[in-house]
Image (tube, rainbow, N blue to C red; front, side, top):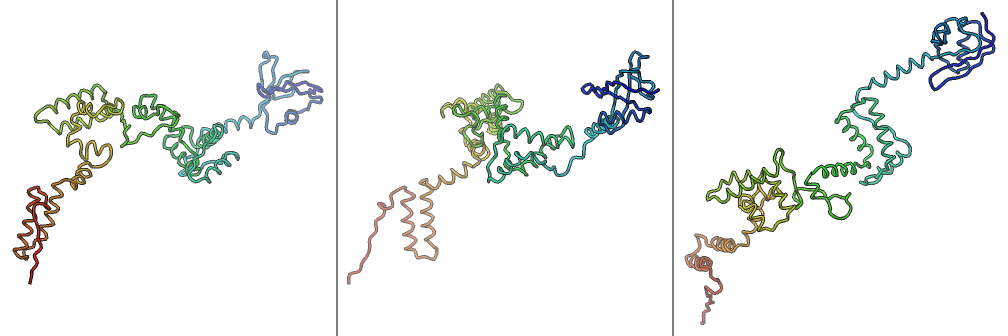
Length: 367
């Protein structure tokens, strides 16, 4: 049966429905498919279905032109290779390449590369990039990472970050640390709370360093302020004993270091108040290499302060002079010289002024 004219409603997908008019309908099914490819501008093979009126316009595959109704007909056309390529692409998306030994940073858009090139040429200058530029960099990196894995680990993130900084040293993660410090401060990190500036720009936080006056560590894990306060009271009680256990006091002083810093930094007490609350802090054992002096300023008070201060003491000065006088008195010297040295040492032992203790005179012979 040969049809001369037909009006087709071709459904490619829900968003692509076309109207095609065929004046001279071909005689064979292959020629009809070729005509549809030409009208639809498709080169791949087609799967054509029509609405069969015998089954309440349900779709059936077209295997013979005589099955088509006369006049107007609705066809559902599917491109074979498009379906196959869809499944192939989705398979490739889920199948990842192995993670490389050296992560290669992709090439960013031209304007971004120009900014990075200019920033890399500056010596030690960090580049402050715009928000849109940062988004382009992160999107490109995410696309490259996704080609290897959709769920990168923390170590893989570190590898990407190291490769990025190595290729573009001008990139700055300074704002990330600022945001992280802000989150920690809001979460209750005492060290960052006490080191935040009370006036001026809030973005510029003073770094909390060891050996600074504002050094304020957090409480030890599993210890609360009440528990540490009880230990402080135990230290006071132990110090009142006639024979204090200095080893136990030292252990409790180490464990209560964070509480002590909290009192000193936040309350700013006087020396007298500190001595009342922390009497063990002023003992010789605490002002030593492995205790307060070493913990805050990383030096030995005993070695530095003690040794150097001895130079200026009166006893040390006397000992030095007596030692010099003793060296000048050798066993081979005559007895008169030994007696003279002994007399010159005598005022130092008696704590007298040598200039007024002995008188000297010159003997001259008159001929």
